[in-house]
Length: 128
Image (cartoon, rainbow, N blue to C red; front, side):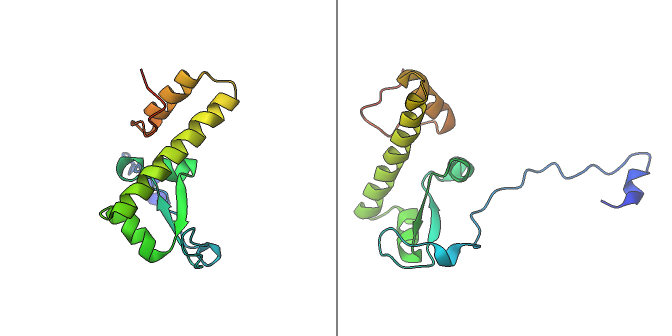
């Protein structure tokens, strides 16, 4: 914003839109696909849609090659459906166990997960 707008009777408001986070490509050549071992892997956010930014914030991501990334995103093949389910339950368990290890009650930890993501992916955990 230029100085002109600051001196006006009704200054132009600043941009209030929140900038979305991206995984970027800075370290892409160093990323290795967990399935094929190829370098140049892309980051796949395990929780998509409204939870994509949460996936980036909390590190709920895996490095996969382009072909596997497209397959996981499409979620049409039985392999992709099973892998997406596996990763969602893995990150939920990891999150809840981290809170439990820090001294929180398991029910409280699961409630925090439900507030964060909005869905339970682990059959052993039963939200109230």
